[in-house]
Image 1 (tube, rainbow, N blue to C red):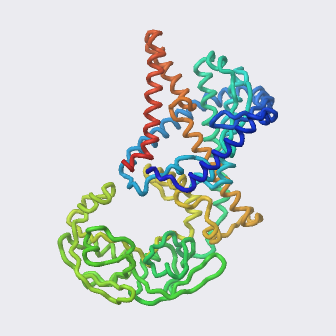
Image 2: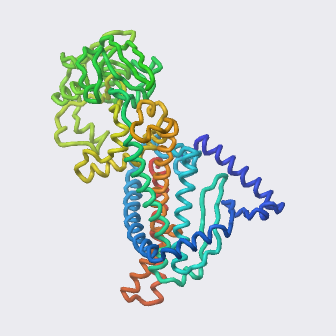
Length: 529
């Protein structure tokens, strides 16, 4: 199955009802009076409004727009290469993704409210802006090339999903390749340029204005075995002290020197007030590898590690340091605390870490792992993963701070773009409440500040996605037309016979187009094959 969720089923019901209603209205002649026409799969609204704006914009700065179009060919070509690398890389990874973690059908559809990653109102606003600027850019460059604009319009499937500027097709075909490429390149280029402008505003002005109200660590994820789990504490709340020790960042959290199994006070800050809870502290087992030593030794999720080989395990760094000094094949005593049973001691015989990583995490394996012991256990202090209290401004206002190598820059950039996948855009209210706004933007009501911030990010994100997607070298996308004209130009430079030019151009374009389609579909079905 492709993971068809209740959300996509609901969406399909709404879409079917939408088409039935408008099919009836078209039959009755109602749509024609409003300039509407149902042409499956879209309800299309055509108008002459906006043509004067496009004409005026193109006429006033013709030289600028011509140079912009030439610049756009370079931008679109770079985007074409980048998006192809990303598509190929994603397709290669598809077969390594477990079926239960594969993208579902509704995640593939870039429809606000249907795709669970795209919030409906931010999504509609971002998609509308990205499509409108995209199409108006095509229109302006078409008029610069003296191509007539027949009409403008919007395309709906329940909500506005597209806009179009319809140039005269015959005049487009009669243009030189460079003029035609300028027109096609203008759309994705404007999307990318607007995305860059918006991300600078979002990062430097808005995210540069926030700071954490208190030092500490913010709960990211919580294991069901965490002692905090049953206390009603949720992700997005901040731990400011444990056992009377103030927490100053992740390192301080991971280096706490408190005897495991002790009952200590944990102070939680929700952005408005602090509450203190008493919990049993220590490294909590959050995952057990099937058929690995920890499972065979009887450990379970929720157990709290006390000792390994007679050495007390007080914190995460202590656990890692100890395990790095163990040897594969050796047997160690392991003592842990289990609720309602108390302290339990059993024996654990470790396996080779290198061989285990070859099976579990091949991309993270290292030569130095050979001979080192591996238990097949995941642990976190208190059973939670955390962020630094200032992670949000650090991630969004200073995304490349500390990056030195090319791979680190790429990783930071990918993390920035991946906020929707991390559940951080729109910024959850409970996390936003942990920060305060300073500087000129502090005059805004807090709720307005975050609405504007989220809107800026989503308009950036969708412009970037629309620009990159349209740069794919597959007809009918803009990149496909640019690529096709490029292939045609190459055949002319190679003095290929006229009869063969069109055949070669069409064949290369079709083969590449179907290859791209296969690679995109493979990302959906590959993990399930």
